[in-house]
Length: 352
Image (cartoon, rainbow, N blue to C red):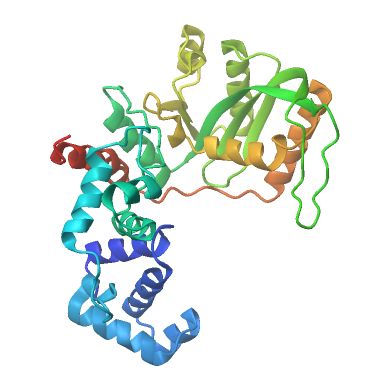
């Protein structure tokens, strides 16, 4: 028997990309056992021996979640003391070398008198990666939390007798052609393209991703203005049956809030806008679809005119709509908000 908290944790560990594969497999064993399957059925499903399945069921029954973690194994005594580990961590977090902004394994090994391998092992054990830096932007929107809950609630529990669209525009898509033909893929040699290119004009793509079906309504325009946005809303209005409400997730682009758009919404009361928080357009699922369009079709394509680019994009969209794949957001609003809250708490507690 699993408590709701245990089930939620097991499901998160099982699908999290950074989980160790052994841990994820043990989570799947316990989840299958909680669904009433026998050891033999589980063993066949996860390709393990029945004895192994039984072992992890017993471990979980005795120790719960802690029982799924590997126990320390015997070996030769440690040659690096806790003091050495603390010294490496302290220098990594609180100091920097004279000739660089961050430590490398070699520079820190020279500083501490330890081997590069030892420093590397300590960094891996504590998840330290000084060579990496990630960018972030906290939303200054005073209604950020309410908007996150509104949009996630719309994704996870859409209203009845309504259709939900994620709407956005990808502006200034360039028609490009390389200055030399792309050299093909060969064994041991990747495809190669020149770094420079010729521009032949731009176009703008408006897209509405149907949350339930994954199908996309799209339009390509030469300009990116309120006029084109209202024209696209009219296209959605024609495509959706009149008896359904239309909930639209949009970002904070200026073209989405003009008086002309507000007047159009007054005349069409079945349209309801849901705005993402400022600097949080990643919450709009159509942005993920734009990413697929870019990586799978536009980035390596060559187009010698805007007309050719538009025809190419329409071809890809038609192919997508023949076999649409809806995106599913698994995280709840609380889980999304826990990320920055946990990071801020850890920074505050560190004394930095």
